[in-house]
Image (cartoon, rainbow, N blue to C red; front, side):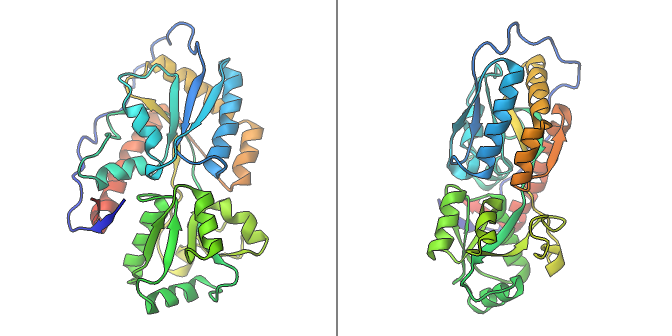
Length: 327
């Protein structure tokens, strides 16, 4: 997939569409769920999102009385799960999936978007976000973020950084930082966190920008964490500054939740919401969030739908500002 810089960006339309009715939900269809539920996870197995959603799905299964089976659909910057849901004529509740922030970006980056974030989905509940950071191999000369930035400025086009994909929060944020600091660096997209980490360890890339899948390697001394992108310092790495502390006014945590195809019965949405909410607050799941430094950020279905509308407008504006378009 090729990215080119353009002065024009995709027009954002239909922001008011796609919100669920605020009326009281209808009674869910009799016997729902009456077969296993597919949980579409748009990343490779083993990453923080995959592990966390497997724990969540297992706990929700106990509430629903049917298994919630994780189905990995990696690729296309985490949008293949949403694409599959958008192709359903009407959701019956037996297919749900993670709604990563890239589903709000890629339609604005493409001239021929394959789905509409405001028309093609039902919103079940919001879950959490990530702690992102920039790491380099421990034997690299840069001890601080400032030294890394200075090198990148002095060597335009030579610094390579890996992310989980085009249009991801990692990609967009690094491009925003580059624009702010006058840095030209080279983006290398990967299908998932494991590939991204291996690339920086092997020297294929100079930096890894990702969620805290890198944390064990930082603690083992194989990677060096230069900066985190949260509002406050990460609990496990209290000596590492945030972007704001190094003079870059950005907080990026890529919030996400669970959604389904458009047209889902409000009663079915309520059944799913209640089951996943109970799982979200279960101590076993909270422990998993803590393991990956992921904050618990619950929103109900109506609040999540409104948040999605706001997020789509904000992310589309960023794409327009950066002029990022896909050929």
